[in-house]
Length: 240
Image (cartoon, rainbow, N blue to C red; front, side):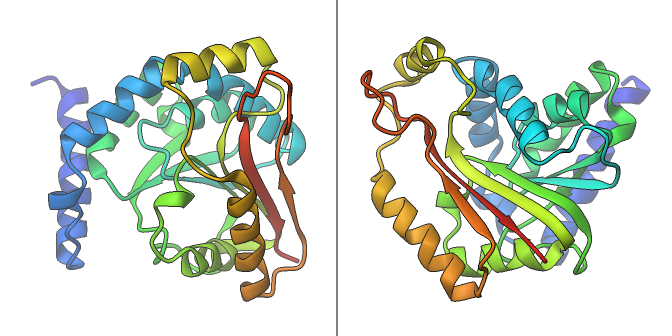
């Protein structure tokens, strides 16, 4: 076994041991097969999403020259992290509850020349393994609807943000993706997400109110476009 492969597999074993030591059942519930399905989607039908989304996040949150720590919760194969590394100076952490993603993610980052700028940490969004006031930015795409206790999870994100820092959490497509490209992604990926965007917005507002977070913005890119393409929904909130 070559040294690079051994190093990645060793890191994955350490992460799995850490999850088990904490009494976590992720090894049973979050399988290699589940990780492989998401990797296939990220490299296939969803591949066009990540570069424009990273560009939008970096521009909207003014991250181009910012240094420090960024966390992508539920990053899975880390495709968004690789694109964010190309557009920022931050060190990015892949915080995911399925550790089977991590060997693939680390190899992908190394192949892109970014191995020294990323980490992978087993993380349950409802009990993040980071100290308070730790991260300069937290992002997440396509994960929050899986969090059983969303109030607790968003509270954890708020806790780990540094004062003055921002989170950008959502699902769907970036607003800077042209309509024809967005329609093609939706076509290839199926008929689109099966959820009520209006109800999701109400839910996110209830969560922010429950946590006493006043500085937040909900974005619904190209809502009501004539092509009927669902761009999804994004929540941006700031810790004062």
